[in-house]
Every structure is written in C-alpha cells, then in structure tokens.
Length: 133
Image: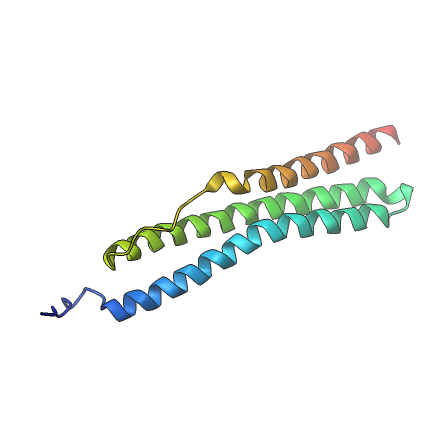
C-alpha cells in the first residue's frame, strides 16, 4: 500500500531530484574550495614576478587585499558546502537511504591557511618595503 504524501510533504520523486541537485551543488562548492586558493596563489605569484622593484609594495598590497577578499569568499563557499551536506543528510533520511553525506570541514583548513598566510605575508612585506623607502 502506498501512501499519498501530505499536502506539504514532498513526493519521493521530488526528493530524489533534490538529492541529485544537492549532490551537484556540494560537488561544485567542493571544487571551488580547492581551486580558488590555488588560482589565487598562482595569480599572486604572476603579479609579484611581473612587477618591477619600485612597484613591489603596491603590487604586494594589492595581492594582500585580494587575498582578504578570496578568504572571505572561501568562507562563504564553505558555508554553502556545509548547508548542502546538511540538506543532503536530511533528504537521505527522508528517503530512508543509508546516510553517506558527511561534513569534513578539516579537509579544507590547509587551503584556507595557505591563503591566510600568503595574504599576511604580502601585506606584511608591502609594509616593510614601504617603511624602507
């Protein structure tokens, strides 16, 4: 005997569709969490390497400020990833599936720290170079 969903209760088909979408969203967030820090570090390296010594303080300050924005964005992406996993777990439960979605925030901490320390180093070096002038 099948039971009809209550008016506010989603159907199993809509839950399966939601499960697929949440899975895709979670993967997209995860990809961004490792791609963005590496892209930032590569771009920062190119900017610094392509700058003449006289413009280095400004270039480093720019790299540092961009790093702050990247870090802010990483935190927002991480929040989206966490919400996706939480909703994945809820939908898996509603579909009576084995819960496979897990939140492992520590996996991305090294990437956050790379951006943080690169940002700190860029701003600190810019300040030291400016003070030497």
